[in-house]
Length: 265
Image (tube, rainbow, N blue to C red; front, side, top):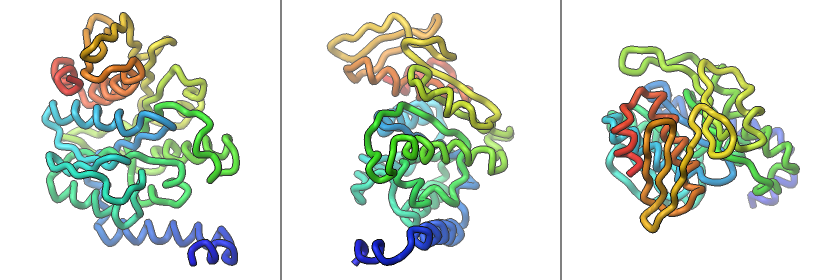
């Protein structure tokens, strides 16, 4: 039935339906994102791993945090598998999760924010404070028609930062922030959007947080940023990128380096 309706009903009608539904859901649940520092993570790969690292760093520092990813959902300390088998749940479910986080006295929420979810307005009614770009490769573009459309759709997450007011976190205004993987050729594009603060991380190119002396071992990977030594317990140099995004978030929240290291481990 849904496929038949899509053929006979103009796409603009579906677009308005998605938008209005998302807005109504945010009203029904009392605009929960206004009471949370919301971090959106987008990219082709690494989103779920990066989010779990970020959660661990914030949790190690005493910042109660919830998240929604493809694999799992956390409401503070409570964890469950994602029951919806989709990266970004529908508008009512997503807003409901955010309300659960507020009720559980979480201070932050991390949302795996996909291009398809944005195309269906699932991000509408969510006031993001931090937008993170992991990487971009030509996958999942069938739904968008072209790679350029795919890239532009993801960029809508970064556009939202300048459209909402700054929130207070522990007595101070929290800066609207963009964090990006500088090793991606598309980093300048995502960093070009307005924000109070912009942070880059990398392994190869110069950035604010460049990993050096990377040493894989049977237990994970060791690396350094400046004088600080870090270690992750998951093999694969690619996981260093996910850890770098979490380190960047930890620094944004003024988390002590020892607690960041504890979270990563």
